[in-house]
Length: 99
Image (tube, rainbow, N blue to C red; front, side, top):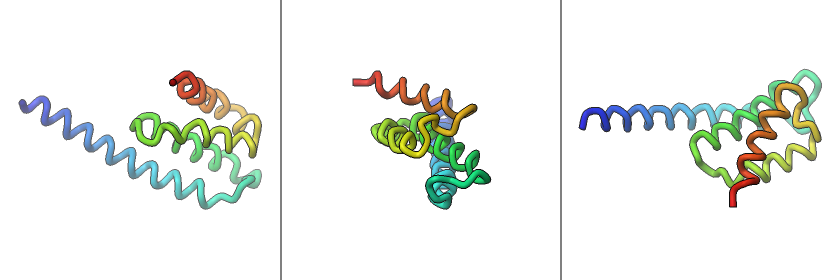
């Protein structure tokens, strides 16, 4: 039906947008050396968080979420602090509870 085609097309467009965003956030994250300088802190943590959130939303490579969070904790136990910690914790809780 037309409705299904429209929905499928919209989903395909959304996946394409997520893929493009993922590439950009990964480029940003990889351009910042670890540990980030004070000037780079927000951008570093935002790009790391958005990368994981995109994987979650797209349901792609979700097995990478917990190992990446563990790796990021080695940089900063608080995962970037206020504004970031809770979001990382939500992702971690969501994927730790999966079998």
